Image (cartoon, rainbow, N blue to C red; front, side):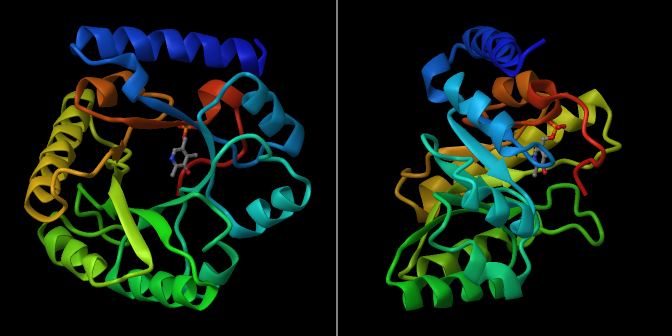
Length: 232
Ligand SMILES: *Cc1c(COP(=O)(O)O)cnc(C)c1O
């Protein structure tokens, strides 16, 4: 199967999941998680109409930016971001999906201010409260969001999550529903109902995520095929 064929198949599944949930398919974006795939694969996905590409390693993204791999589509950073690499990401991507601590918010704010830009971000939620995983714990999300509102060079567009890898299908859906609940609550309480991105769901569970309210799914292997490393 080609990248274009895979994208067409995924879109059809996404549309069916949206319709089944009484949602408008047009409100759900497909982000290609293109790690470990070269510039040519990125270009194929863009030609096939992917809504955006997402990278999770700074060095790889920087290299592919140099090869104009993302021309014609928005670029997102979706992986764990170290504070000392913020300079290489802020101002270079349309959306940083993976801001999961106040320390990282501070670093993004500082760099965005220095560059004179406003950086769009998502707040990442560690919904399974997993040790060693990035993201705000659910109970810390509101204070993190309040802090983000004090950062004039950061714009929060919504939330992102990766549920625990060992969750059962049922547990996984519960996690998605919980994050959707947080999205609705903080959207109403802190963001005047103006949040528009709820990024959740990957190759194995994007239809479930759409059923639970995702507006953005991040799909890698189902588009690009097998790769030699998985989500950390
Ligand atoms: C790789 C990756 C994905 C996509 O994973 P697949 O299971 O290959 O679809 C989604 N989100 C993040 C943060 C990733 O790093």
